[in-house]
Image 1 (spheres, rainbow over the protein chains, first blue to last red):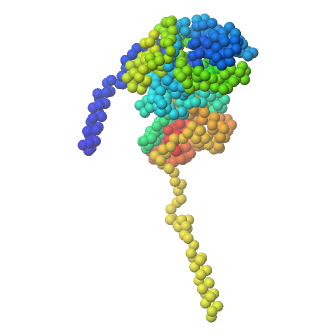
Image 2: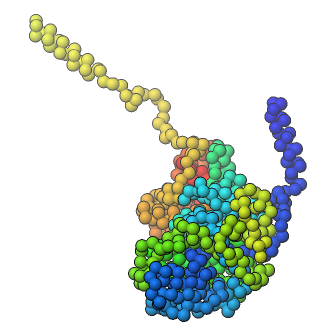
Image 3: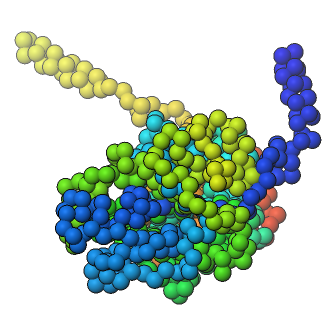
Length: 454
Length: 167
């Protein structure tokens, strides 16, 4: 052995001997410094660009349509989110519900709105004006101006922080998306070399996984015998992988590291979902379209895996680019889905009932002024998202240890306003890794857990 | 005399043309057997896209091509699942369960009748290369020592291997 080689090996051996006693059974090097506030967090990206005017300000048509078309019938205010927000519904010009012309609002599921159970941060600063930048900002706790579309987030997501620093297993972290569009399938982990897929979240895009595509290519999968068939199969696969790894250095693969037992649980879950779908018994809020189906499958995941963190992406209200009436209906339906979900967690998932904190915050807001498009049903003006009003969003929290508080952050958006990126550090704080996330250097410098702002 | 000279010159010119053929590789006789050349595993450095992987897998298993639309939809299935390896595993087992068309897998009896040939053909089918002696030995032992080891499970392990993701 050459002298240099000897020194290198001796150094590595000494370092290993020093470190080995401190490696925890979970494989992690250090225990998280924080304690859990609650064992489960459900974070909802609510819901594809929505204005504070139609949500927390409860201005309905008055500042969206009446401002530009000042007829008295449009000067209507009121709350169209009765499960999430406290406030009286609009008294006239009801178009946001179901039935003929949307004149029948969906009956609230929760007898006490979540705002009255928890706390509303009314004026929160959205750090990005677009859906992708906004959505991954909620997951990363930061925004990255150099982030292109159709690429993984460049800095670690909350999933990776939790799994790397909190020791959470892969099935503790789930992302449920509503579409393959707009980079949504890239949300479950970053491309950061120190984090990445191995610490990523499990993910389903249910309208594809359990949709027509899934029916064709996933539904009829065999469930192999774990010992007699799968175990030898994996053994031979690992042999082939080791042979290949010994010959190449670019063996970087996009694999979330589920254990074999976790994989088996997920495959069995998928099989069950196809059976429930065929029988028409999948969980689903009674009203609503794809967003409702997405929330329903998220509840199926929660029921099966009781994850530490479940992030749900819905975006029905994004029809606002050309259909304001559809936007109002989608906000109302998304609120119905949230009410259904919160009630279901409390009544049908014993492991999460009373043990979960709910956080909802939009990826971005929408413009103050409309674009020239009028919708076909009511001639309502449509809104895009790019101006200062797009920065105005809210964050609603409820659940374990979150008592009812007067609204927070009620003043105009300023440099001291909470950020929507605070959702990430808040999630980390609830699950016991606040300090690790703050120390990482990847968060927005103003990021602070909203729990500390209550 | 002049005619004789002309004909002689023409004859020599024609003879020269016939002998002036460019020699090709096929004309040479090296007296060695023809062999098919395969790339080595180390030369596979490009990762297949999800659609490419599905298309190649389907062809390997069914010995026929999948339509472009089906390749796209199967690729979407992989995209929609967070654990890509799990997604691939489910798609492979879905194909293995197909009744029409049936996957083209040797019977377990034919596999055991000539294990070395089965291993060689499996490497060529999935990994486009010949197994090393060590690899042959490993699979020979695996199949010989486990009476329950089926050709389907061996095919499954190749289709799910990391090397199969690269070209």
